[in-house]
Image (cartoon, rainbow, N blue to C red):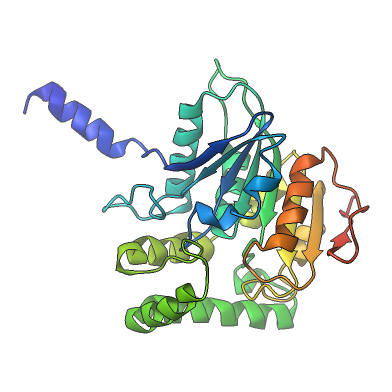
Length: 291
């Protein structure tokens, strides 16, 4: 191998991989959809048809999942996910500001991206809005003052540690769950085990969501179902109090983006300012705290 071939090979190994773009449809302001752990862009199957009439909708598969690359030496830190998303967005050569929608782990990825992204001098594209759907908010127990919330979060973290440490148990139960859901909504297998356990440990269990959201200077909408089993009761309190954040609780919806929750996501995307004039039968809005 020549020195140039060796150099380019080394550069390719360190360059963030491009993510698979599963959907690029519609015309208008750009909306980029980023799914969560052990899933794929199918997460947004109920959302995309509600947006393409007025937006260019781009849905990606995150690093290690769906049809995106799964580098064998990747640690799947939040920085790895963000770098791959940033490289993919740069490759699109967008000219205008865009909206980022993240679900579950995708919420952590888009929040960090929006908090740290700096366009190149020749680029003008910036994030115009961030929408977080079902964000798994887990502060370190030592940082939680409320003893009940601290106990709940500690229990979730212990459960995640158990799942990571018991591969056979986790995969067996994941296979049962995946058969009950549409294909692509929940993908946990031998193929995705390494991205799953590393993303769980390095992104969800050790996260910066709260500080990233606090640093944002764009509108942030947080949308979650009242039946979401991945959000400990009381965990959202710190985000509810932030400037520029609007909270939406969607009645009778779990962690999956079903039709009712999809309508709320579409409403947030379509609004320059999300108001409280939404259907009370569909969701209960929490007005943003201002200080």
